Structure formats: C-alpha cells, structure tokens
Amino acid sequence: MSFFEKVFSKKAEDGQIEDFLNNLDVSEESMYDNADALVKPMSLSEDSDVSKAVEEIKKGNILLLNIADIQKRNALKLREYISSVKDAAAQIDGDIARISADRVLVTPAKVKIIKKRAMD
Image (cartoon, rainbow, N blue to C red; front, side, top):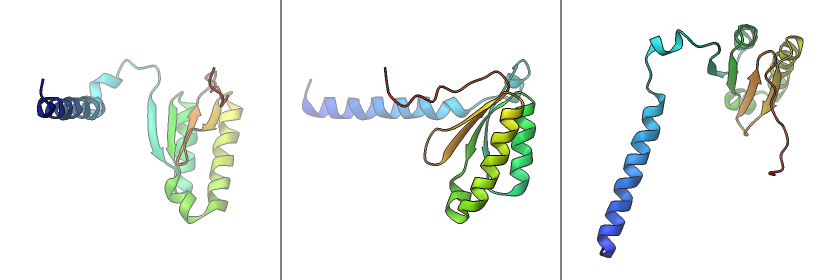
C-alpha cells in the first residue's frame, strides 16, 4: 500500500468514525417510552433552571448540567444554584459531582458517583 493510499484510507476511516459518533445523538421520541430513567442534559444558568433540575432528579432522572454560562457571568450565583441542587439531591439520597470544567453530574435516589480521582 502506498503512502497516499494509507493517508486517504485513514481520512476515510476518520470520517466514518465521525459520522458514527454524530449519529449517536439521533433518536426517536418513542425510544424513551419504556425507560425507567433518562440522562438529561440541561443548562444551569438562571433561577428557573434550579427548580427544573430538582424536579428532574425527583423524577429519578440523571442530569448532566452545563454550568459554563453562569460560571463566566456570576460565580456567587453558581455557588447558590449548585448548593440548592446539592441539597435537593441529598434529601432524596442522590449524588452530585463535577465531571469537567463546565459539567456537573447529578444522580437521583440510590445512584452514587464514584469520586475517586486516581486510576486503578
């Protein structure tokens, strides 16, 4: 196989992988009918988002909160919002953890997050 064939086949594979990963987000609403819980991405950027997040964890859903916007605008509000969500999660025996600079994971009752940073 020549150098060019290797390069072009690599790009084709990368494109196929990219298409495959992009299509993971495509779904039909009917797929959610039989689910016991959902993983829901949400933004946490205003007061009303806190109550929506609390509602969702009480329903038993797992939340992936995007905090990037409020983190840039108002660190004190972010602390207030996260404290409210954390308290609500604790009341129902849920859990909360930061999983990246801009994301917080919140789990419902009886779902715990392993927070160990070191890899075994």
